[in-house]
Image (tube, rainbow, N blue to C red; front, side, top):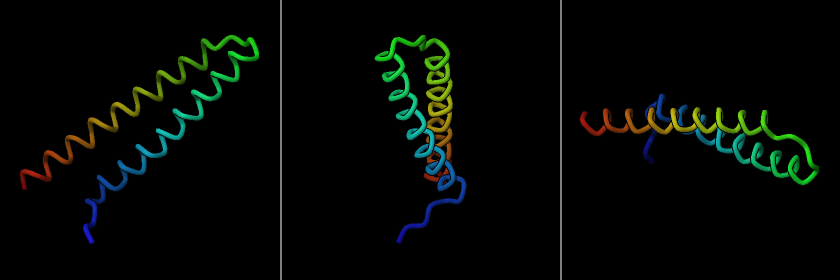
Length: 70
């Protein structure tokens, strides 16, 4: 079995966790919209989570690039 580099394994966990947070935030915003609540702050939180996710994706690509050059 292939063992992930420790940093890559942690990054994969972070990505999965953040994807779940994004999905929950999207569902929360949908419920808020349905109930007529202001979603400005919730949408800003979603945007922040998406930025974190983009960072994790970039870090994963950087690590994979380094590992493939070794």
